[in-house]
Image (cartoon, rainbow, N blue to C red; front, side, top):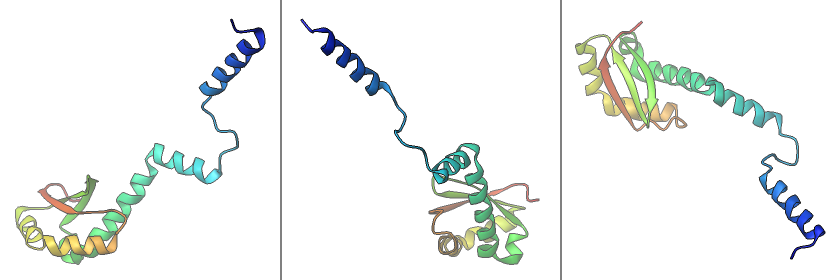
Length: 120
């Protein structure tokens, strides 16, 4: 039968095992990074970088008739103004992927999906 000290030690051990906080203070950089990811600011920044890269990769003529959307699972969605632009983008797909990969190596774009849609 456990004595009083052993019981007290077991209770203290159980309490410390349930505590989930770190012993020391958090670094400010970690807090800001966590806040940015929770609020979606990181997505906005990567989306803006992706849009800039798309304009550079597509060139002025095609970029004025198309717009980059979101990246999902390594696939960039691009909206084209009409089917003629969509077909031209499809013809240049391999070149565009290579250029996007060169311009934004962090985004890990492995494919591009073209759709006819609104371009503002």
